[in-house]
Length: 288
Image 1 (cartoon, rainbow, N blue to C red):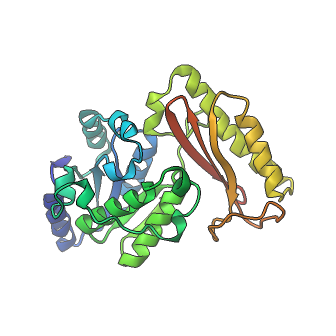
Image 2 (cartoon, rainbow, N blue to C red):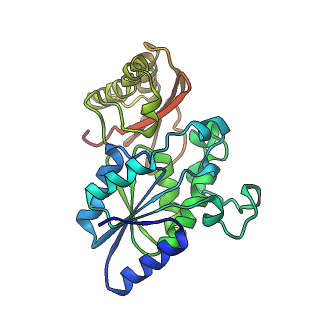
Image 3 (tube, rainbow, N blue to C red):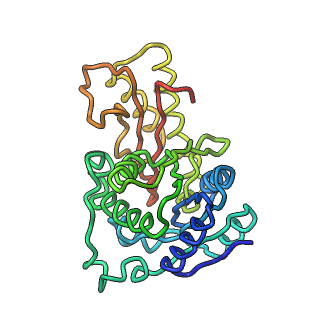
């Protein structure tokens, strides 16, 4: 039966009790409005651990746009039903004050340095976002303690930041998980619910662009300029604003020279469709 805990301090006590019983804890941090992507993380955690807990907290620190924070979809009761059906053991949430009891307000919270992987891309287009992610994930890790923590690879740069944080803390074990997609190829995201039918159709070009780059890579193309141009041409077929469509070396987070080829690469895209911002990525040197 799902145990619902309404503050992170009590959740921390629950986790300590589970470890005292010798249980291995799996942890899935979320902002709620659970979809198939979240469910795959939770199912994997349940299969690999003695108990699984989930956090639901819409973190204001990672929104550089206050309107985006206010309109972010929320549905706690639906989330609880999903977690119960999946067989999750515990879910916890909390207020800003619950998460940061030492602070009088958001402006008083000590913001953490997200490390070297925060440079460029999301770091440029969403100033303060990765700092906010790092700050709240650090706090969540401290509440939950030693565990296996599951993160989707759709938010690839965020995953790198979280892995860096875990290395500094010495825990938890970060478990990266494959992106889960709709039959159209569109990556599951809570923001998809904000898309109109026409906008969702347009959004499928994101995955089309990524797989086109992957196909070129498989034929031996290593010219990053050509690969990026191919992605941008496909994205240009729809009415969306392209923020970036680029390649990165996943083992060396820096912008490659447009004249240099890569032995390994991940293609990353960020677009705005109407008022909805979507990101996605695809590793080119691995199988799809």
